[in-house]
Amino acid sequence: MHIVSALKCRWRDRRGDEGMSTAEYAVGTVAAAAFAGLLFKIVTSPEVRRMLLMIIHRALNLVG
Image (cartoon, rainbow, N blue to C red; front, side, top):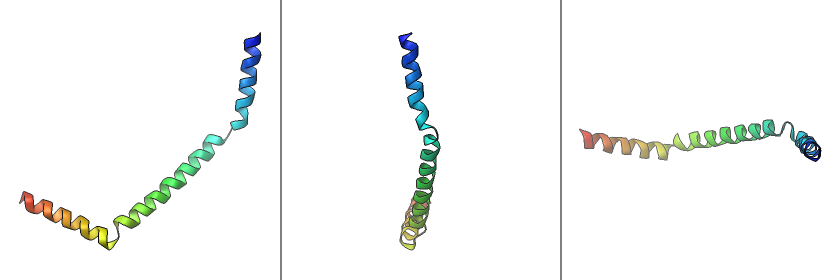
């Protein structure tokens, strides 16, 4: 009987966390979207674009 009452207490304590995983997913999604926006802004900047084109040009010259 002691085990059953202990399990009931554990179950009752866990019920207070309902909805927490949804909030955590929402925060994670917002953070991922913000990071993607920042990364997009960096990659499309003229300096980074110039560097990437230079790297591609050098690679193509090595092949051809």
